[in-house]
Length: 273
Image 1 (cartoon, rainbow, N blue to C red):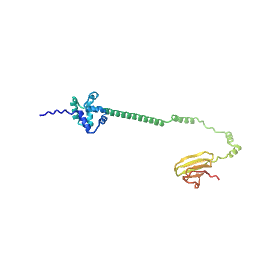
Image 2: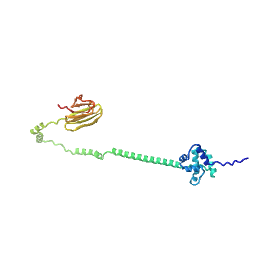
Image 3: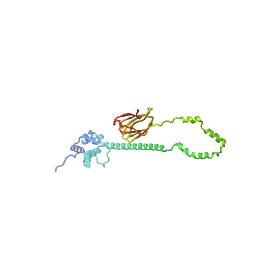
Image 4: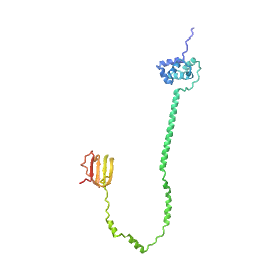
């Protein structure tokens, strides 16, 4: 009978063999575990002295999960290699876990800031709306005006019938003098302003000035717009496209057939003879 003296396979050998079988490098594994490549190499070589020894069990378990190895078999090999009894698994707080937790806390913090900012904005808008809805302070004293009117009416004295002499004197004061009547007849009536109406079937630029040089219209007018102007004739009119505009002067249609369509036109209304 022969005795099998084959040494048990260590956890590091299991990890190294599985990594090579999957075609992974030390650098790739180190990146996944948030470790240095040297630390991964020490795990595969079962060199657990120093700082690595404190977290060795957790690193080996995480390495095994990355390579999809049976955890019980791997941790049994780890215990036989190091002489440490396997304890109940505890959650391993790796650098990736800390990073994920910190990211979650940061997102929660920013969400809190956003909610506070939104509440402040809503409070400010509510304050503005409240101030707009408040009535002016002067309106508070208006109801007091009612009794004052009644009091004034009560204080009116009884009417006294005027004497015939007083009536005659009053009529003489109201009768206008002949000179005043003649002066009233000499007053020249004020001339009415000329009226100009423009109707736009399409958008068109327009510039209108009256005889005094006052600009009474300027800018682009929209289709369907009806523009009423008044001023002193003649009017100097400039149109960007006269074919889309119809004009009446003092309720008389203006003939614009001689103006070229689609070209800027400048003309006078009414035309000088």
